[in-house]
Image 1 (cartoon, one colour):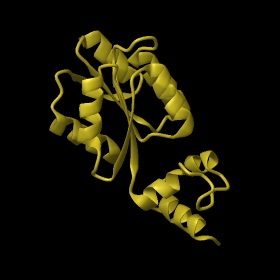
Image 2 (cartoon, rainbow, N blue to C red; image 1 turned 90 degrees about the vertical axis):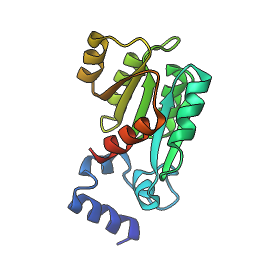
Image 3 (cartoon, helix red, strand yellow; image 1 turned 60 degrees about the horizontal axis):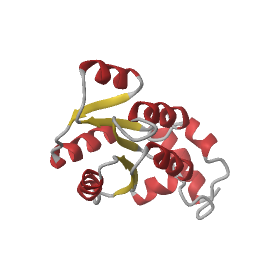
Image 4 (cartoon, rainbow, N blue to C red; image 1 turned 180 degrees about the vertical axis):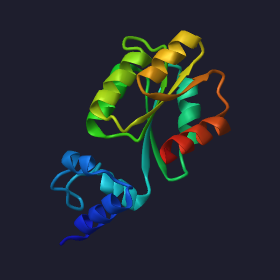
Length: 163
């Protein structure tokens, strides 16, 4: 039995990985799937996707979240973010609510359909209680109003990864 199979079996046994995840990565071998979830665990790299159309906020969030053994990727639109989700299963999505084209709620729906285990944090400068309730109903674990405190965002991402 290969090392990756032993690791997978141990992670399922410990409850760290669900058997469902294996279906998404069946037949994995070291180096076979560049973005393999099991390899991410071995490297302790969680993948985070930051989506905001405001370049400065996107850059600030990306820089604040880098490190802590997190790989952070950013996108400036919902459509660009969806393209990135075709290449990688992200552990956390941090998305602005108002985006050009596809908004954050539609992005949340699409990402959760593809990857139900992805934790979603919605940020907005235009949040209302109704929008916050809708985002949470669709699977967002946090709805945060701008302006953002970067230490608080790191804490929320860390908390979401522990859930």
